[in-house]
Amino acid sequence: MNKPEDQIFVIFGASGDLTKRKLVPALYSLFVQNLLPDKFVLLGASRSGFSDQEFRTRMKDALNEFKETEDLSGIDSFLTKIYYQKTDPENKNDFNVLSGRLKKLQTENGIHGNMIFYLSTPPNLYPVIPENLSAVSLNHQSDGWKRIVIEKPFGYDLESARNLRDKLLKNWEEEQIFRIDHYLGKETVQNLLVTRFSNGIFEPLWNRNYVHHVEISSAESIGVEERGGYYETSGALRDMVQNHLLQVAGLVAMEPPTSLEPLSIRNEILKVFQSLRPFKPEEIKNNAIRGQYIASKIRGVPVIGYREEKGVNPSSLTETYAAIKFYIDNWRWGGIPFYIRTGKRLPTRVTEIVIHFKPTPHFLFTRDGSTDACNYLVIRIQPDEGILLKFGMKIPGTGFEVQNVNMDFHYSDLSSQRIPSAYERLLYDSMKGDSTLFARSEEVMAAWKFLMPVINAWKTDPSIPLYGYPAGTWGPENADDLIEEKNMTWRYPCKNLADDGIYCEL
Ligand code: BG6
Image (cartoon, rainbow, N blue to C red; front, top):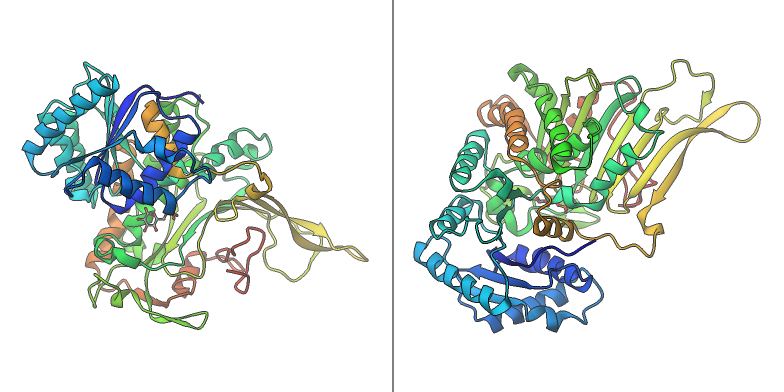
């Protein structure tokens, strides 16, 4: 891998959590791998009044606490690249001062005009900061490229997402805008492309003729923690499905791209989003299930319900669990159901894709009594990252009794290989200007458009239940009804990729 061009990397929201937990540790990790530009400045900007030295000390503490790499020998030299500028994102005058500081840093460090502005701020500032930057010409590219990187959520619904898009596009070109979806930065999500398009054995089966249904699950064992205030404006559907999980579905369902060029891959994902069958209002009740965790005990320890969490309305109707069933109306997937489910306070933390293959047309043998008679392929995104294929094998002895067994690969077997964090990859790509793993505007709009009927129905139709589920369980039992066929249900994954079932280690 080669180094990005010399540049200044500005983080708005530099005193916040994301900066210390993810962004700075990821930049440091790039630094120790010699993947930062030769001339590089990291400028933190936020309302707090730190000196350069105070900010460096905070970042040093953060690097020790949230380390991405065991090699901490370069911290002091990395810190010399870090500066801080007090900036109120809503104060236009502060942007004049910021612009002056950037010019000074450019001269002192011999860096031309290449700059990234990373918005790690509350979403209400997403339209404000880019506008204030452009008011002091920091969107102009005559002396070097300028990019803005925006965290999710990109809008609250279709209309607000369109408004935000239009505001940004007044002063910035689409090519300058990098919308982060950290799932796309995950090594195992990218490996989906390699699994599908570098192996002759899977791709011929990857269609409606052989696949029975596709399941994408993302479970979290934690609750909303300190983020109750934000979560109240979001809920599981907006927080996880609209972005991360639909992007994963896009990679599972897309056609082979003509090349690895960003446009080529993103075009194919967009086509999937454009083929999503719109939900009809009358189908929502049966095709989208919502739930909210209620107080319970997890392994003997009492756990509060969502409505008791800090920052949450005691009569909140926000869903902490969402499951949907949907179709992709194109030649490859016509008639094949896709299922997505996600939730907080489920039994374990796991994200995985399960491709369930159709059964053989006529089964000759006897089963060992288990119901999962079909082959399936599990692509585990986290934890115990890896791939598992289930297939039938003869149980040794007389007769022809068949048992489903595992063929599995775990990333942990590659002991010399460390899996880089999603942010490490995405920050590097944004510094290189590679937008392959960033969501493009049309994708974001298409994803909102697809989910709006569900969002609206959940908001306005009181006859659609919000099921309570005890914290530490797999969500509302009614979600099982989404998978209608006899003897079929969601996979109940465990910590270890190779296991499943309700009683496994979580
Ligand atoms: C974030 C959501 O985007 O993704 C969080 O806002 C969620 O609510 C997180 O916990 C999950 O990310 P990961 O990488 O831990 O699966």
